[in-house]
Amino acid sequence: MDIEAALEEIGSAPNLERLQSLKVQYLGKNGRVTQAMKTLGQLPPEERKEKGRVLNEWKRALEEALAVREAQLKEQALQARLEQEALDVSLPGYAFPSGGLHITSLILLELVNIFRRMGFSVVEGPEVESEFFNFDALNMPEWHPARDMQDTFWVDFDRAAEEAFTIQGPFGEEVNGLGGAVLRTHTSGMQIRYMIQHTPPFRIVVPGRVFRYEQTDASHEAMFHQLEGLVVGPSITMADLKGAISELARGLFGKEGKARFQPTFFPFVEPGVQFAMWWPERQKWLELGGAGMVHPYLFKAVDDYRERQGLPRAYQGMTGWAFGMGVERLALLRYGIPDIRYFYQNRLSFLRQFRG
Ligand code: DAH
Image (tube, rainbow, N blue to C red):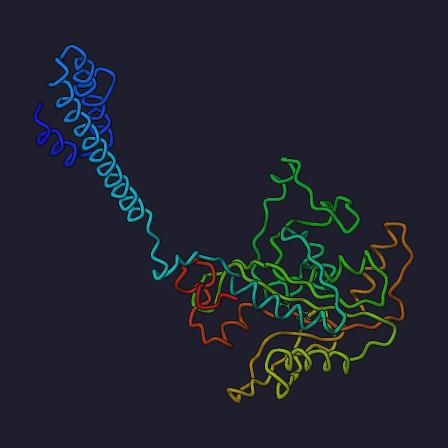
């Protein structure tokens, strides 16, 4: 046996498996050295002593070489694993994409919160509305020219009725008999619904989607949002309206914000105004909406409806004010957005600029 070659082979064993088989090959039960030791007994005593000494030395040398190589290979494996599992804590982390509120939601929340601070409740209503709540009860009868102020999406009511579609009134009652169905052109119909269901005094704001049958262009969309307000009580005045709109101006534009009223006509208020707010930063007035004192026609229409429902009349002797404003319009003016259509094209490069 060539001990030098054996030690050499062990010293360069490429892996632990190979090392293990070398160990078996030399020192195992049937290994070369073990076998040689078993034959010692057949030798004459002189030779036996010398050969025994040599074999023991080989055995010791082999064991040592095996142990050294084993330690080397284990160390190598450990180093490889450490390298592979290394964690570079100086690498920048992953930025997880996070969502955000849409610009319309942000503006609506801002508006609604200003009114919440003034004690208003927030209510919502249906987007498919009966002609009665959207127009008639708001003092806009069919023949009234004001009806043409708002171009309307009509719902094919006959077909809708066939498909068992109904519009429900404030108490869940069917109101299909009260004219056609429309996509609400404004949130003002909720004034009627709310008054039918509640007795004054109260303060509400109504955020919501509205629809107009319109050619779209940079300043017109077929769908947009409004915020409606309604306050009714035994002695509500125009001064209260001016105070609330002024407070809204301060909420939006800081303590130098203020409101301006100019007379105008809306069938559901008398007197009616359009209001503007002073934007101190830009030193300009922003025309933001309409308002006025609730027209007595509405109180009568509401009380008549209540009576038909078996409820007591509740609006005699009451006064109130209402307002309505465009949500996108405020955002357009405030941020200098050139085109209202950007709002609902879902282009992230636009929307991300306004994340809350
Ligand atoms: N409904 C009106 C529109 O869509 C806005 C409006 C004007 C609402 C005057 C009101 C109001 O409550 O008093 O143009």
